Amino acid sequence: MPSTSSFDITSTIDFQEVDNALNQARKEVGQRFDFKGAKADIDLNTTDKTLTLTTVDEMKMNALWEIVVTRLVKRSVAVKNFKEGESEPAAGGMIRRVISIQQGIPIEAAREILKYIKEKKLKKVQAAIQADQVRVSSPSKDELQEAMRALRDHDFGVALQFGNYR
Image (cartoon, rainbow, N blue to C red; front, side, top):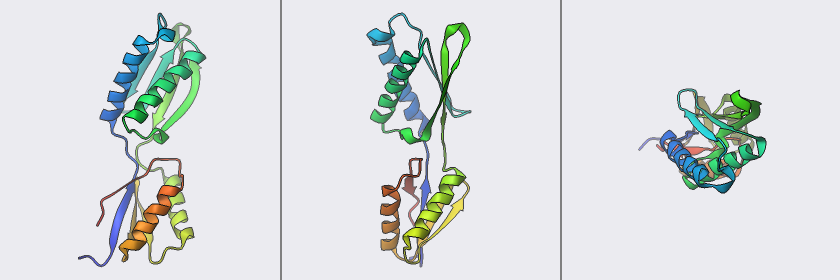
């Protein structure tokens, strides 16, 4: 048994679940009365990690975003990792909104996590940033569980997942 235990804090999005949720949203948009005859488009770009919504006016844009969020939540996808952009004019009198998808923990959030763990003054708990994740280690598993509980209760602006327990 190792002398120190650890776990990793990550923030990932399952793009297959996002795609499934967007397919459900497209189907709902096609069936809704308020979208009859109006063009509404939902595009996912997994390489750029962006979601593009296109429709005719701001009211329909807000309704479209609400449908997408509802479907994402029903498929257990963390909506915190979707950073909504501003609406901008598009071709043909349409408007477009680009939503960026955050994959991994940004460096600012990772620093905030480290600072928060230090402020909690948990005995012998150490945290280190490793690329887009944070590793938390301690000789005491109870202290690690206390750190997890504290991190779950605090909002860092991204959805946190805990894994790779050792």
